[in-house]
Length: 269
Figure 1 (cartoon, helix red, strand yellow):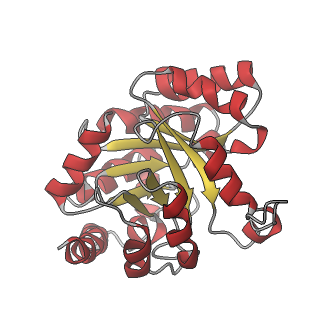
Figure 2 (tube, one colour; figure 1 turned 180 degrees about the vertical axis):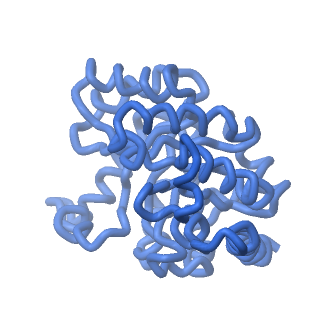
């Protein structure tokens, strides 16, 4: 998918919402367990209820591969029903030496035709470049994450006085342009967005942590948006697990997605 397609969808939907398909057999409403493929049925319902309010979907691969063969089948079936207009992200957090990265790239860009995959950049350039060999596909590098453990390494100071995450952004941004690379930046790190935008002013940022993790959407937009909006804000649990009851499941999920879209619309106008 081209950058322009993403920007057009954001403008059309007045939304920069990404719905995370963290579909867990232990958490999905019990009435879905009556189906032969409960994860797919759950995802299908979520997509039908949210597609008008979001511009991207992000299946977290761990929830599928943990189920073995049937999980991969559910993932493949899910990809088939994500609308072509929506950006699809494999939240896989891969990263390995070159030849192994090439196989990971084939997995998520050929076997499963995602538009993008999340990658851990710790092993450096040769672990990332194989993913960039695929035309119109995106690399989304972990930049500054939302978890507590981000303090362990990402905020270590380099000899130049930078934080380590700043060095990652600065170095990796030379590997390709902003039409092929995005960065994960957690919503729970709002004070860092201004600094990040000084390093990567034009890149899209995939922002987890809004919703159940308590990230401030207004602060993210104020400090992290650019002229193209430049944000894909992910919400998972707050939308897909909005209700456990069959009687109001559809209404609760759609309302949760609509409310976030409306907040985004207000910020964009």
